[in-house]
Length: 149
Image (cartoon, rainbow, N blue to C red):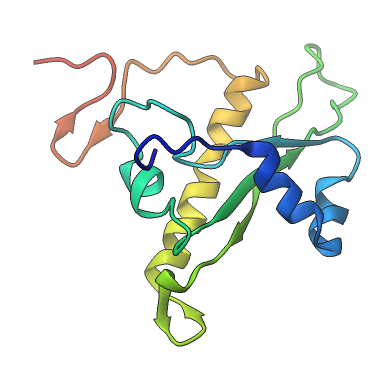
């Protein structure tokens, strides 16, 4: 987080609930509000772009993510349905302009990537699939929790 800045989900949620179009989506039945990328404290250096660079009053001063709990299919034995979509709402600051009053295209792509990247984690959280991954890869090789030499 930014110099000890704590993410206040309720503060961000209140900002969007004050906008009728946003409130309609956030108050729909079965809606779960979740932390967006890089807003979880103490991630051990992960998500620095979101936690520091894009977590300022000039970038994304308010940011939340949400999904709708799907109804379980009648044919499912375990009663757990997959979440196909996570949505996000972001207040955009002037520091993200690529052209006056227009967000930079690279930031648009980063925003889409950050929200889409929440889908697997949400499905793991609701029990659609277990976390059986041994780790993850980065551009330089194996870098996940199960680091190998």
